[in-house]
Length: 84
Image (cartoon, rainbow, N blue to C red):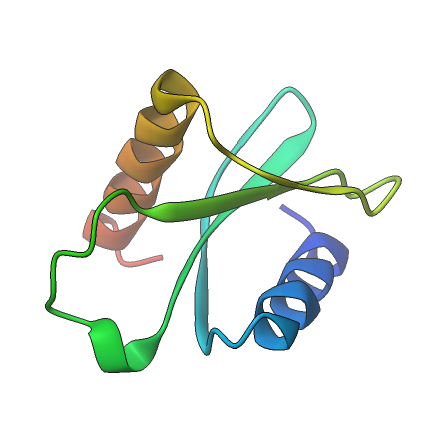
């Protein structure tokens, strides 16, 4: 994963009013990120919020398809369990 994609994603979610972001995997050249508000930690508020970033073009896409959303959140949980 590239720092460029992380920087693009961080700037985007901060403009939207979110203050926490972590990597959630990589697939087909797209980098996935899970984001949330720290004030909502520990509360179940529906589906996880995931965006994907194309590190070459800088294009950001909000992940809406349930299968893609669940894949990305599963990868996020694996990375958290590994301590990354």
